[in-house]
Amino acid sequence: MTDILADTIAAIATPPGSGGIGVIRISGPEARRIADNLFRPTTPRPTFSSRRLYHGHIRRPDDGSVVDEALMAFMPGPHSYTGEDVVEIQAHAGAVVLREILSLVMDGGARLAEPGEFTKRSYLNGRMDLSQAEAVIDVIQARTETALRLAAGQLQGKTATVTHLVREQVLEVLARLEAGIDFPEDVADILDVSDTCMRLRQGVIRRLEEVLDGYRRGHLLREGLRLVILGRPNVGKSSLLNRFLEKDRAIVTDQPGTTRDSIEETLNLSGLPVILVDTAGWRQTDDPVEKIGVSRIKPLVDGADLVLFLTDAATGILPEDEAVYAEVKGKPCILVANKIDLPGAAAQTAAPAHWRTAAAVSVSVKEDLGMDRLRGEILSFATGGGRSFGDGVVPNLRQKNLFEQALAAVSDGMEGLTQGLPWELVAIDFKSALDALDAIVGVTVKTDVLDEIFSRFCIGK
Ligand code: GDP
Image (tube, rainbow, N blue to C red):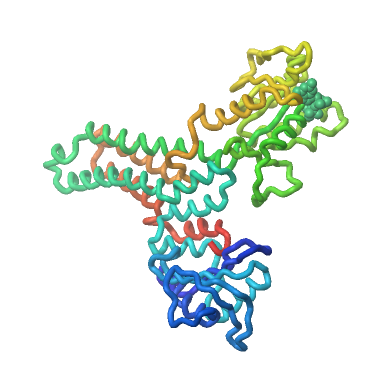
């Protein structure tokens, strides 16, 4: 662990492209010396105080020529982001300028940082636990305000706090079990089975279940709710899509994997990212069978979290609607009866008895009627009935798997206790629960897991 911290790393910490300022970050034992060689303060001074910005110039050490005007800040370890000596140079954000400064820094003895290496060092130096380090990525990648609020909560240590609370209780039970193994004659005094199980149910099982529920909800926030609009031709699918895009289009830079010409659009529905699968491609065919698009519906529906099933309120449900509905196959579905502005449109469209719909909303996409109710139903589906996002612990997939392991192990342990199994066996369950909890905050994590986590960062973070 120590040798990977021995060298000094550097990277451009701001995104590529031109802009007002670009930041070069240097961290490690040589950071200060390297910066001293390049940076000439406007007012000469013998030493730089920590956490102050100094104005000056970056000069090439060989001929003293100026590369750029810059500000420099020195943040000595251990109270810096990485826990090491950190220097940040703010220069003009042009690709050539920043690359030249970076290469001078590297000539001075630093090596290029790997993705996430600054944050990894922060974790290795004990500045944050692993769940907080992971939250740094989530803050950077947050697509909506709510997702950001969640990530910020994790960054402040919410996951760590609940993990420690649960861990304490598991540890206490484990300590008692081990004492009972050492002093078998005193087991009755050492641990009361029914009392212990009751406390575990309240303090551990219930908490872990809450955390796992948070995962389910947070998953939608991170990944977005995948929404597919289905319906026979001419019910208004494109019009609905356009209505959403016009009002709710998320202003985000493209995520990796989604490009301009992809068939997915990200919406921001009151803080909930919604990935609307655009079926434009197959709406434009002239083939009558393909026109309904039944053959192409299946993969879309398979990948969706929710289907918006559009019908025409003026015609009511037709056999063609039934044909398309057959492809929904049990996916959660909101019935949307469109065109209520037309004369003769039914105010309420009841779904046929065998349709399973989570809600039914009547709208006129054209006249913009009922659209807020529709948005409300989508949100309420995602939040499980109006509970708000942003509170509590929302683990990521890695943490969720470990919380699940801990939950299963504690449940097994309680069962073993109740059945009167030998405490040596029961202790194994509680130990594996403890291991899982420790891995969440990074007390015990294998190097390859760490590498995987930090490789998801961008360079310079
Ligand atoms: P798609 O084939 O399902 O994508 O349907 P379109 O979005 O292309 O709409 C088919 C026709 O219905 C178009 O002429 C739309 O202008 C019209 N339409 C869509 N929504 C409404 C609505 O709410 N009221 C009325 N009166 N017409 C609508």
